[in-house]
Length: 193
Image 1 (cartoon, rainbow, N blue to C red):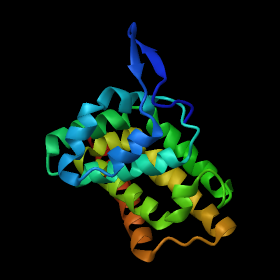
Image 2 (tube, one colour; image 1 turned 30 degrees about the vertical axis):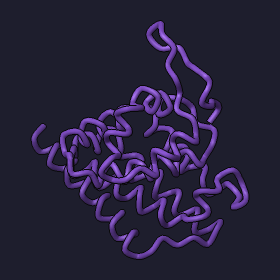
Image 3 (spheres, rainbow, N blue to C red; image 1 turned 180 degrees about the vertical axis):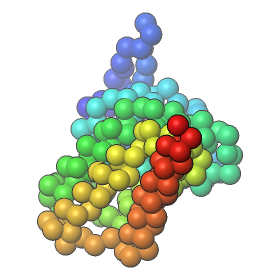
Image 4 (cartoon, rainbow, N blue to C red; image 1 turned 45 degrees about the vertical axis):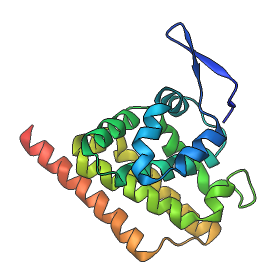
């Protein structure tokens, strides 16, 4: 990530603080019961981060950790509003690009958080995708389909080849189930149209 705590971006004629890595890390470590409140307190900076180019790969791991916690929240309407806003941000495209590049990064690279616990990243990714499909199938089709069906699949195939990483069977089954669910929603949508 190119920006730190003290740097500002321009937005609507006023300075907008961009969330730094340390703040994002603290936010990701928030208790589940406080997660939505903590994000709301820093919402402008958080979304500015999601709309910005991210050049520190560890940021993706932290955001996925945060999104996974959001998905566990029991405040459905707040959760849905936040997830829809995230799905409509540049982050989804950037995450797809991150996944496409991931197999080509070295284990001792800047992507330390991912390589420390690859399985946790994928569990968080799956939880986020499942939550979007359940809460807003149309958004999942329109905004996340290439991420779920394309980027993650290609990424995992290359991770096997290049790094001998094998996703646990239950995670693989869940990802395949999510892909099938998306296809079923698409078929249903096509019947209506």
